[in-house]
Image (cartoon, rainbow, N blue to C red; front, side, top):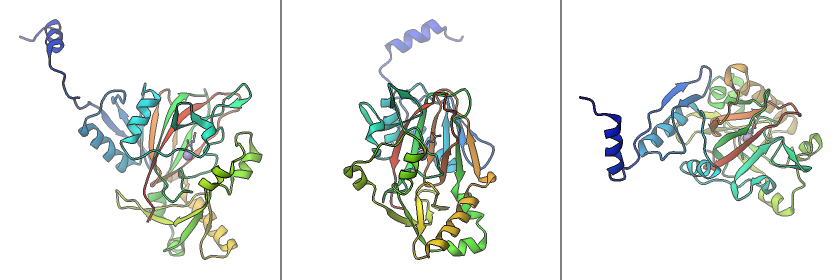
Length: 305
Ligand code: OGA
Ligand code: MN
């Protein structure tokens, strides 16, 4: 005889506190070059080691995970992110979420004449924080307020970009290093919009340029990936500037060929977690009259090799 629900509830009420049970969630790879959706996972509940291991593996396999319908607080967003590594505090402290410096607000909303977040984040293809000696492992962006049109984010698979690089380009980048700079495009971005505050000397000191290999090896999946992008890469070391510009332009064009790109159309309460070692990304743009706000955490990675 099956037990009645009333009896089951009664039994539960008297049970000893239990360790969290693994969550039943489904992994659905997205059609195309990268990404998977996780359905049925609730990040506001405690995760078991087993849940975490599945998520971690899925992230390595697909490079981008879409967690649908996450009703999580900034605290829970931070705590989940932290399980993957230390969090980075963005140099633009003006756009930290008050009380939570680990969260960068990405938004085009202006309140009382003041932007609530960085309005032009991701205007050029980039890998987050590639301008630091220890760039980001991955970022988690959580939708707070979405426009009725536009506001997509595009992602390109840099493992595929490397694997399909024409032989001549592959030879041209072999063993090369490239310089990454936060400041190189900053002045231009200041002119193009009203989002970018002047940087203090202290802020400038935090973002001195660095160099990284043009082709990096992913420390966890062992695959090679192109690691240059128009947002932060300024030149390939050891080449005259014109040759470097021409080579970078070819690499950029190849990286974002349509067959390497996934376009994410945001749904309410989406949390998207991508791998900055495997992908570059771009903000598709939002019409000025529509509001968009997302919260980002950024996990620190290791030195590219
Ligand atoms: C970011 C970013 C793009 C977007 O938050 O790192 O690049 O579409 N955002 O908001
Ligand atoms: Mn970004």
